[in-house]
Image (cartoon, rainbow, N blue to C red):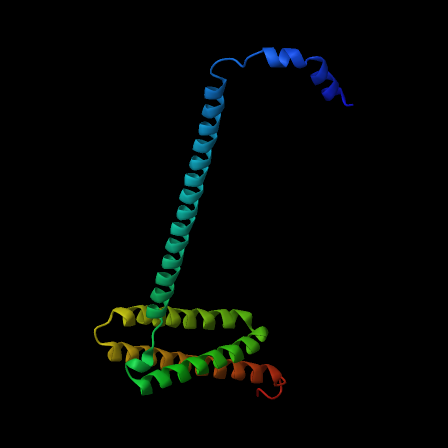
Length: 181
């Protein structure tokens, strides 16, 4: 026999004679009620937490969608205004990128001259970016697009001149002192 069984069998009479204190069942019932209340509070808290998280997710998704839509609207689709002008704008922008790469490749020989050339092009690009901003607010988008294309054409002309100058400088450096005469 275990210790507990031995203790119970020896003290059986005291267990049978003693009555539980009055109000014990009230205390037991109160503890069950308290447990039930705690469970209800935990359920409410879990539901409230779930709803808070769901609301935050909805807000984040909504903000993301609005941000995406705003960016989409800010992307300028020049082809809606004039497809021909839009095509020219793309071609000129592509030519500028090519010429800038060529200029960069030739710049190793004369970095100071390259820096001066870059400053001129950067100023023209600042003007171009300003035109892009104006385009989104302009009532006459076609006119603004034409101004943008004009700016790109001027950038191409300046880049061509800069490349010619760099070619000339490179050719002069290749000549021997006797060929200059």
